[in-house]
Image (cartoon, rainbow, N blue to C red; front, side):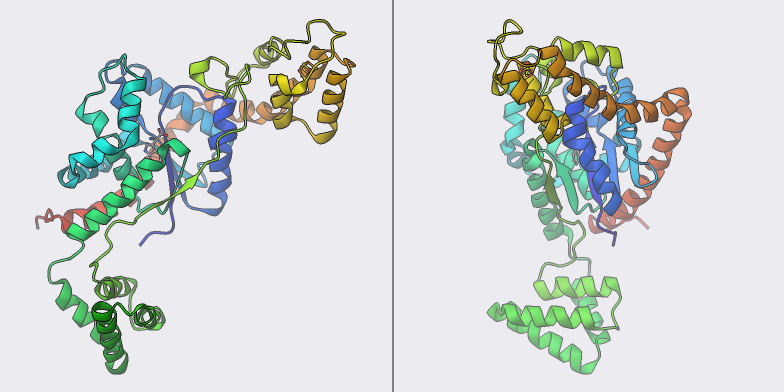
Length: 400
Ligand code: TRP
Ligand code: SF4
């Protein structure tokens, strides 16, 4: 069994902006310190909606990975890779397609939503319908227990849980499971073996939950069982067979508080972004041109910070003292808007400085990025192969 892996993917949409940084990447950087993490570029997922024009995907993947590294995602701590380089995802997706009822896919809310939203594209394709199924393969192939995602992706993780359950139910019984389980019970030794059988019967016939708990404690405490033995007996106790695939939990990534240049959420589709590694002159100019409280026409007009998108940026970048200075100065017309914007500009540039520096190393020597992704691919493949061995055996595809 694996350690508790955290896994997340991102579709390559090109260079990332500060909204991605404050929403997703800061979270990844935090997670990589306490968990074994896998982060990957979901380029096959990009193809589900960009099959008609796939040319940009490769470059977008590259820029995105450099942005991850710039943000502090550390290849010494986390495994970074590109989805399409680990072919096992595709194999698992294919095998899943055999057991997934069409209705399950059609009912995933993002299916119809996205088709309507992207109505200029023909998304009535097999691949697009299978979007959540591919995502399930991404997650289950690493037996990931935690999946950081935004709110919009929660239905996909729930779908993944259901699929894992269905898979385990269909294939969790290795041939001769009962016999092997009985044999394993013998390893517990006379008294404990008899106690285990008695507790199992109480649980299975009378639903005695306390008996199940005692049986589990017995398994936990017995020094005579290997990890695999323990797992088999847990399946025997609960009547579920063997857990081949692990049901993941999602870790909800809170929506970023980073507003865009117009006060709406920062998003590429609104054209209100600042790129993660945007150059200083351009950042300065964008902030200086930002709209402010519309009632502040002249310098002498008092303003209301609550009606000003710059004020929202102060919430992200300024300390209490500076915010106080800005709010008071605005309301009393004591400061001008350009003056008010300066600390925000300084804050953004300060945040970006280490990112730009880290990115430069990789821009100067792209072989470093290639090495990181090759190493990530190898590590991810090794984990994926282990799961696929069990999956193939469970589905009768061992062949010798
Ligand atoms: N669908 C996710 C998104 O658009 C990206 C993704 C693909 C993903 N596979 C995944 C996220 C597996 C988490 C786990 O954001
Ligand atoms: Fe906005 Fe600051 Fe100008 Fe007030 S002073 S309107 S908060 S930019």
